[in-house]
Image (cartoon, rainbow over all chains, first blue to last red; front, side, top):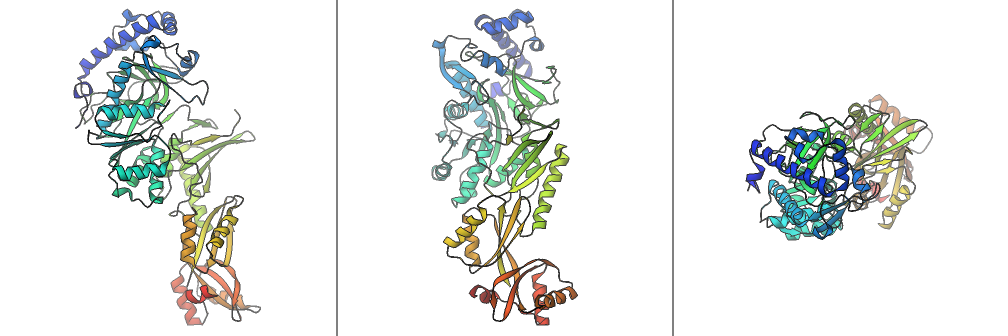
Length: 433
Length: 142
């Protein structure tokens, strides 16, 4: 089965845009009427639902930021009374007050539909055995995927994250065909397989749907080769709905954003100007069907580009490129923007380098320093100092020419870089700035 | 020819004691060792009585390990003994990657572990020139 909902996923553009316009107007109307913060924001720019005549008018609407969610903690941005809210999710709040999101019954319905589309796009059918290793709980990953997997009638194994040895055992015993987790955890599971004497190719695993952290094309190749599977990128964020906002199709040339529910724009993060298709910038999403927490022009902080050329899969929805990084993950070193995914791409193009790395940023005197720690696998190891130093030098040169800054490479022992069962920590910033 | 076990070590407290404890617990005896170090990491090179098992237990304990072919050369335990061997190697253009001394001796001779570029060729020349080196079984029995 190629599509879950062909009518929506392949809707002719003209028809789709009519639907979008109608839903956008409704959203502006509802937020103005029921959310005081939006009433104020919209009044400031002097726009009401009647002023929205075309999708082009979207760019006159005010932005919503993560700070708006924090300022309205916990429920003040909700557009429905709490009696209509059936579920609440929340971020971990590591960078401040957690951001809280709510769902009505219909929101949960739509979310399950979106996840059903996503899993179908990755080849899942009701015959699939889906091992869901995203964390269950306040994090949207676990339950989001779960509902979608049940909707298509697949058999779900709700392992959640952690207890990797057992994960691998169940994968073997239950005949998992599709794995859902963060890409870094997929690699960690591969290590656990090898340690447990399990040959990945003997498993029934055929595909994986990986997301919740940026990952490079090289990381995809690494995962596909090591696990012998097809790896699909999924995108989402709890503020918008959770996983399922966008999914790759078999063409793997970008992630289709479910445009019947979300409007996507790319802006210059500094000038806030809308950029044309193909230009890299910050993704901005407007949810146009959300009941409990509709967000207008939400600044995702994720950097990507949009592509509207026709996709061979037949879906008409716009594609976003793999996320380059979240502006929060970006480190500025001596004025140069560095994303962990850029380092990852360079490292994985060097044969024998393992996809486990850590960026340590420090300041010595007034100078920022970037140290990249790379694990020495058996393939890279030599009994001669000269050869190991040459290897370090080669990695350093590659990184420096790609990042445009000086880098120190430190070779470390295998498995000394902490493995993650959820989102991997790639950067330790020791600067007190 | 002999097998050397090489181990990658980060320059961190306790790593060397960990390796030696792992080997000790497995009942493996170290016959010769050297450490090559840089500011960030070191390479521990070992000659042990059971190299294959040493390789296995170190790997199981999470170390990056490799096996390397080296020559355990017997040199006269008297002034100029090593120089004589090295001069003959120089004449034959045999390059040495590194060398280190053995803890024990073989009869009246001292033992030196040599890592060369081409151990096949080197051992052949050693045979022609009458430079003695131990084979594996002799070495591990020491």
